[in-house]
Amino acid sequence: MRRRQNLYYTEEQKAAIAIELAAIIDKPTLDSETIWKISKEAFYEWRKKHDLPLILDQLKTIFKYFKDWQGDQDISDEMLLKYGISNCVESNYSATKNKVILESKTSYGTLDYVVPEVEDFHPTYYQEPQEAIRTIVKKFVGYFDWCKEKNLDEQYGRIIGNYSMGSGEEGSEITILNSLPLLKVGNITLSNSDALYNSKYFEFVNLSNLTITGENILQGLPLAFVNSIGQNIKIKNFKGAYLHFAYCNLSSVNIIGSELQQSNFFLTDLFSADITNSLLRMGVFYGKIFNVNFKETRLWDFDIKPSTKDNFLFASFYKNVKSVYGGQGDEAKAIEYFILEKETERAFYRFKTKKVDNSDIIFRHQAFTKAERASYHFKSFLSFIEYSFSYHFWGYGHRPLRVLRSALAIILLFALFYFRLGNANFHISDTKEKMDLANSLYFSIVSFTTLGYGDFYVIGGWKLLSACEALLGATCLGFLVAGYANNKY
Image 1 (spheres, rainbow, N blue to C red):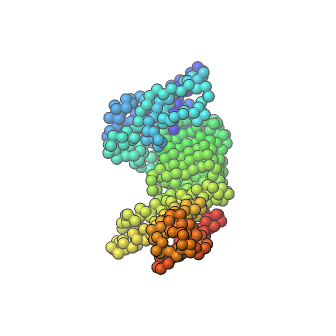
Image 2: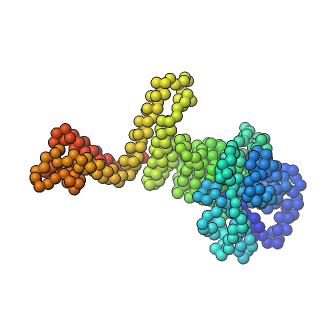
C-alpha cells in the first residue's frame, strides 16, 4: 500500500482544497460523511494535526526500540506522517527488506511515495505515465524488519497485534495501542447514487458497518485500508478494482453479487466472511486466518496463501477453494489447492509427532496418560509417513510422472544388490556371461517388468529378492495407470 504525495492538482483545485481544509482543520472530530466527502489532501492534513500524532506517541511508548530505529534509519516524525506510519513501520514480505522513497517526475508534476524496493519499478503497476522518471530518494528498513536484523526482542510483530473491539453496533469503539480509539469511517453506505465518495488511503480506522455498493464507484482509483479493524462490512452489487486491505482484522464480512478485480487482502485476517454470487479476479489473500464461506462464487486467478509457516487451519480453507475451482471447471487450480490441502495435513501430522499436550483432544476432557501419549504420537507418525509416501511417490495421485522416477530408483537399487550377490547366487544359462553391472541392471529391469526371460535367475533364498522387485514393478505400473486416469480431487 502506498500513499502518494504532491498529487497533480491545478491551481483552482488547490484553492478549493485550501478552503475545504480551513473549514475542518480546527474541528476535534469528523463524522463519517464528512470524512468521505472531503478531498484526500484535506483529510490527511486534518489527521496530521489531530489523531495521527497520538498514534505516533503511543508507538514510541509501547515499542521499546522505536526511537532507536528512528535514529538509526534517520526517520523523522514528519516523514512518518507524510508517507504513512504503516508504510514505514511494517515488515516487507519480499526478497528484500529495504523500503524506498520513490520520486516520480512527469510533465504533470511530481509524486513521491514509499514502496518496497524492487528491481524494476514498472509504471503500469504504479499507475503512472510511461514517460515517468523515477528516482530513489532514500532507502531504509521498516521497524519490525530492523528489530529482526538487530536480534532485538520486540514482542509485537505488527502494529495492531493487540486491540479491543466493541459490539459492532453503530457508535461502538475499537481501540488499539493501550485503549487509543480508531477513527470511525463506517456506519455509512457508499453508492453511485450520491457524490459522497472520495478515494483515500485509510490508515488506523474503524470501518465497522461500512457498506460499499454500485458499479465503478471507485472510478478506477484505489481505495486502501491499512492497519484498520472492522466488523459488519458489506460489499454489495459492487463492480470495480483496486479495493485493498493490508494488515487489517475483519469479521462479519459479506460480499454479495460483486466483482472484485485486482483487489487484495494482504496480511489481513478474515475471521468470518460470506462471499455469495460474486467474482474475485486477479487478486490474492495473504494472511493467517481465512474463515470464508463461498456460495455460487467464481475465482479467476485469485490465490490464497498463508502468512505463517505450518498454518494448519488452512487445510480446510484450501479444501473450500479447491471446491470452488473444481465447480467452475478449472482442474489445474483445483489440483493445485488439493495438493496444498494435503501438504498442510502432512505438516500437521509432522507437528503432532513432536508435540502433544492435554489441549489437543478437547472432547476427552481428561489428561493424557503415558500410554495415550505414546499411541497418539505413533498414529500421527504413521499418518505422516503415509502422506509423505503419497506426496513423493505420485503427488497424491496427480503427479504420475513421479512414479517413473521412483521406478528408476527401485531398478537401480536392486541392480546394485544383484551385483553384490555375484555369480554364485545366480543361474546363468550362458557360461560366458557373468553378473557384472550391465547384466545386473538388465536382470533388474527384467524382474521389475515381470518379463522373466529365464537367461538369468536368482537361486537359493535370495530368489525372494527378485520376487519383491517384481511385486514393486506391478505396483508401480498400477499407480502409473491410476495416476493418469485420476480426475478426483
